[in-house]
Image 1 (cartoon, rainbow, N blue to C red):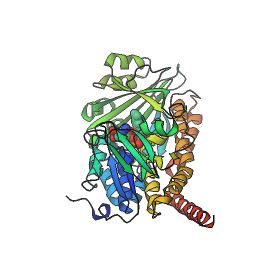
Image 2 (image 1 turned 180 degrees about the vertical axis):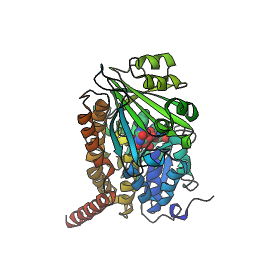
Image 3 (image 1 turned 30 degrees about the horizontal axis):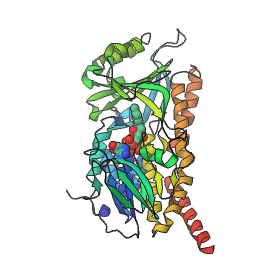
Length: 430
Ligand SMILES: Cc1cc2nc3c(=O)[nH]c(=O)nc-3n(C[C@H](O)[C@H](O)[C@H](O)COP(=O)(O)OP(=O)(O)OC[C@H]3O[C@@H](n4cnc5c(N)ncnc54)[C@H](O)[C@@H]3O)c2cc1C
């Protein structure tokens, strides 16, 4: 099927843009730019899109951002998404429970707090979502096996250098090359303390259990609907994936350090089980059923003083990679894509690009960096590092998702357009 007409419009702007990295950030910003009549080329290092198979969840803010970019993007998500299995839990994000008794102070399994939001818990395999997004992309926009290793200023333009020895010249570059971003290092300089991601002190064991097996153990309610089991120095998330065929298990543990160069490594089941000794029978049974687990070291970015320099701007994880404890990193990238695409769509010529990047920086830096710090703190709360008191935990959780979920992105864009107009007038006056 041919991509929708809205992404194949002839370019109407006097400048072109390179997007480096074809993850969720790179693809959504490319789609938004194409709609705005910006000539765009996407460079991806891999042979094809979506080779990493992890799952992601999206909150209401992310779902709204998808719809704002295009109903086709929202449909791309809906086509492959999995929700809580029972009708009664459709609006539930997570039921928070104790996963251990904390030396007999609490009853493992007891509900601490039910967190609800529009749409409830959602999950999608990153590769499935990317596959759907790629169907919207017209031919000739993406180039593969293009690992960008450096860039230079070339007059007013940017010259990208690729590992294969080739170069490409563009009026502007949006770096969407993820948490290990090469372009972030070039933009900030290798010696900047924010140039590279740092270990967050948490790891995540991940694995799947066939839903039929886990239903026999836990019953339909707990197996098919999202649960979070909290304990000391650990917490376990379970939710259904693959349209309810599997239960996904993400078992987080605190760790003092991570020494391997690899961030994702296979582990044997015994090692994973030993980490949850002393937890409730139910929690240990879940852990025991996980087949072929792997462990992910969770890194995040120290706050960078800027997201742009000249005509290069960071977006998505390249700008603000966070830990996953608020399930919002990819959603923040989609918000970025909507704002960036529309700001560049509001200008006509290349000499306004830096103004648009400067406005993007002003609009997005505080909100996205708040996610990074808030997410770290949330991980500590889920591992009972602040308090194990149920009322305290419930109060914390009830107050910490609203600012992410209830954000008015259209209002933010309107503010940005006004800032662009003011900058344009100031430039004319000088
Ligand atoms: C365990 C875990 C669980 C998570 N759960 C959630 C969740 O539930 N909800 C949520 O919203 N977020 C979640 N996140 C965060 C989410 O995965 C990221 O925020 C999101 O994927 C970032 O998208 P991105 O496109 O910015 O980066 P990436 O997905 O990393 O994409 C970067 C792309 O750039 C390409 N690339 C890299 N370097 C180069 C280069 N030099 N040249 C060319 N191409 C390059 C890569 O191949 C890749 O395709 C989770 C993260 C982790 C680690």
